[in-house]
Length: 60
Image (cartoon, rainbow, N blue to C red; front, side, top):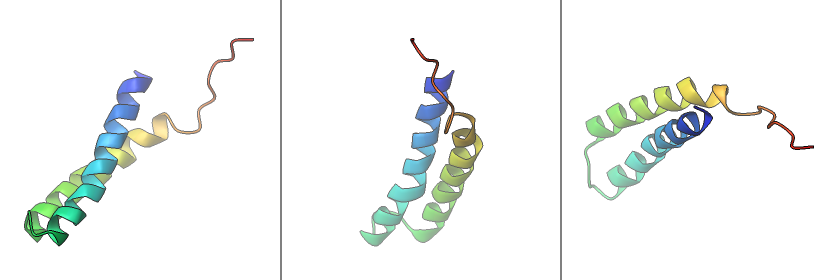
């Protein structure tokens, strides 16, 4: 479950960052960028708090 949350978090982070570069290179329009960035932000904020700063079980 933790690995799935990490994967979804980084997918959300990518959806937040990559569309800005695509708009800069005129590959997508700004309206598409806004939608993708919103989805990415919600995905990142919805999944990242559940796995960040959690202590890993020790093998000691």
